[in-house]
Length: 310
Image (cartoon, rainbow, N blue to C red; front, side, top):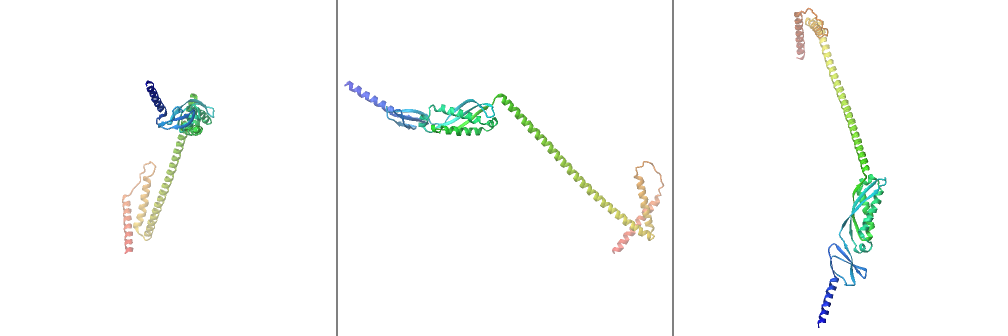
């Protein structure tokens, strides 16, 4: 009787062990491969799964989330024989658990070596200036090459980024001197261009000023000539009137002519540059009489114009 109870207990324990071996819980973000007698049969998804105990077993436990892996520093020789130190980072994700488990051994090491090799290949085909200025192009080319190479492994490489590109110290100093020389060159060119533009603007201003001055002088000369012409016409008209009056025997006209010439002579003497003091007789009564004659002559002329108008 006691032996039967032990047998039942043994059967129950064995059943519990078999159930525990057949029930598998897969966490989120993971996938398990199932092997039957060492051969892959299927993949367990996240959640509760059942397998056949003893016959089936879990083969590989794979992380299906996107992962990041650092690419260690390495030295790369560029096309123009400059040696630089480069490091980077790779983002990848397993899409097919079976391929990632059985198509390649040591998946992360394989991706790392593949990335480092292609970094040397891609960057070694470029000049140093291209290397420093076209990092996006390098990242895109690396991503294309590595992603195509890892597709048979069930892996998707989502991004490859070059973190640091470090040239040798002497090369950095040479580049700094070159950059300084280029900046000084551009500054000198801009300064010379500024001086040239200033001289051009100054010349243009002087040209416009000369044009305006010449235009002003021309206009002034024209107005002066017009004024002299009108003065000459007035003098001719006055001379004609005086001549007619003299011909008629008008004494006032004679006085006007004499007084005019007398006053002009006095004006010439007064405005002369000669600093000598000149004493000459001046008959004030004659001048006043002549001026009175001028007034009478003007009244007669106005009277004739009014008579003609009536």
